[in-house]
Image 1 (tube, one colour):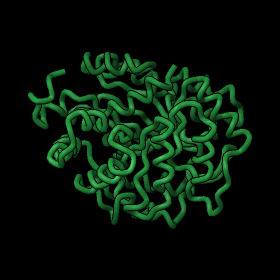
Image 2 (cartoon, rainbow, N blue to C red):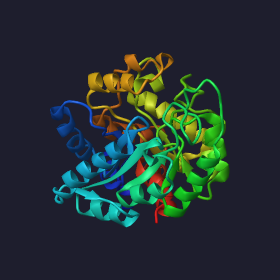
Image 3 (cartoon, one colour):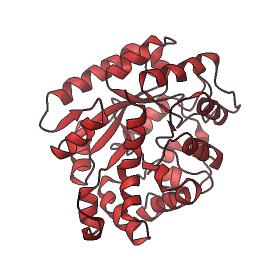
Image 4 (spheres, one colour):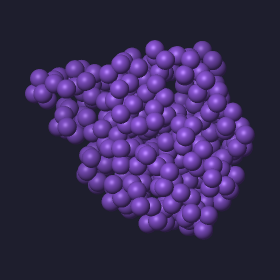
Length: 331
């Protein structure tokens, strides 16, 4: 890498490792939109993407079939993509100008109550897993549950098994007490892959300061989200995403911030999908139309530098912070 003093915003963005911890890739949306998404990511400097292949609404068999489908697709395009097993694979993919990919599951119902499935999913490329997706499951409560039940006995065993296997524990979409319990149980860093600060915008999907601090104390990271209804009144402006980063920088330090943009490439189809997984009306998911676009990423780097962030801090936020956590957890 070049010395920081020689890099302007464009050069820094190109040179930096850029990671997005959340890209919905469930089987939704029109093929023409889907086909453009990863190339757009690459064109705008992204080096690693974690693809969401399921939420809590899909069965174990459906999830396994989704993983099999995507593995076959990406492995058949080795000049473009690299399915990663380690941090070194991510770095090698950047050197080779290929997009590094892993998978995530937004919820734990795909385990079907069987801890043995954690290692199976890990070996198939699932590198982080949310404990609950909005609603209650065997592990605990989602963020939209009216109560606040904590981590169940099964959930405690699950966190420990994820630690053993090397899968990152992810508390986005998860209820407050369940998340706090998980961070108490976990012996490894715990992340919120895509959760904005509730102090800036009141939404059940956003998190309180105590959760962000607890994640940072565990050695984890919190990913800022580019979904307009989590940032404001369908506000997906670059300046608004910077505001989320500014808040977390003051609260937990730049070294605990990453990107989890949650970009949706087909808004109409995603709204239909959200209705099928019974997202609550209070979440305003039917009004979800604005998303931070891949083309805004170079603009984000420029805005952070203009706002006084050091190049080291910007590199961390863009990707190196998440990779630090991955290096600490992945086996």
